[in-house]
Length: 564
Ligand SMILES: [Zn+2]
Image (cartoon, rainbow, N blue to C red):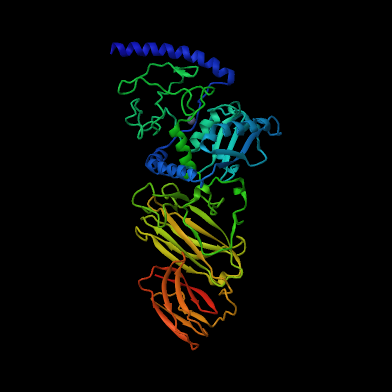
């Protein structure tokens, strides 16, 4: 007891000394205030802790993709917002310094293959009061109106009264960091970007104190094992080196890294992320912030990122690291997420329907809210059919409504072409939709997820296939509409194939699935009279199939949909 008291007294004196020393340093760059206002809530800590393994898998796959040349560096689109007086004077940070900010963070993140691109003109917030009196807790909600969606918004105010900076964690689904102007050219920017990409402080203790031994490094502190725990007392850093004497619960002396961006070191000292922190940043980019692709995200929601002209088109959300053609709506309540597994049990799929990844809505974060995921456009001119198949998973007592909508007038109007709601059990189901009435147009699809009022209601989609047969069938001349007829279409149990006018040769009938695999084959007799074949589909997987008759002179192709 005596020893403890003695140490406490000594510490107390050291603290006073350092507070004096510190305040001199701090005064040289501004008044003393809370260094960082980014505070994780329990929900975010749960989310992060439950997804650690998933994050590691994503990074491993990313490394493999990089080695094989599939993944290239990622450029993060940035929009700067800078405060000024109401008269439009005294910008918190000059355009010249904003270029330096971009240079600085590009240098710091280049080792991760991440760069930052300014999306264009700086946007100004002209309000003298906010300019010099911005307060995180009071004024942060005001910034909702200024945020550009799916772009990293970096705000600078001339003075933030309570903190030097703060960021939004991925769980917030807001793309924002806010920094006081005097810290624009310091490591505070990297620090807040670290939070934005999921990192916690190395001195985080919400889940208990991390031990110096590392024994609990995945469940306590910052959940990262190569960052030594930091007892969190800034005054114990003499310049960049820790010289405190604090010990952890096991009696081991702390040895925090004064150079770590996420630590308690001085802003002027911090200059590195640890290896595992870098991997967490990459994982967060792949898992939480994958929608940050380019500045064109500000395009209106109804404009197509690309137009598909070859079919069948398949999207299984496997290549999102290189960017997907699917886009989040910019005016809805939440973004769909990409995932291998859901973090909450009792809801959502255990695995993807196809490949390793699927898209889903996280019900526990957004209740009674709408999230819209839009497809690229599909050019259906000179097409005769349109079929859409996809897998959906609606499991949980609080499941809301999932619908597929279609526009043929560039988003002016959307028609609902498929709707499901309520609990459909813990399984993937197949949707098979025939939309032949839309051929001849350029169309766009979108999935609209409307979450229910509870947390057990994750909706998921995967393996979307869009098939469309060409209007003119056959590669050889003279196709005849009466030559190959299928009915009923869509078919459930029995499909009747009628064919005629195959004057000579030894025609063969093939049925292929959307992947091009032949699932049925039969030689047809050399006759000219009308003939028919009945196919029993009871054992066939639901989906889109192509029927092709290849003869000596002619070849005919058409398609049908097999419904479960
Ligand atoms: Zn922080």
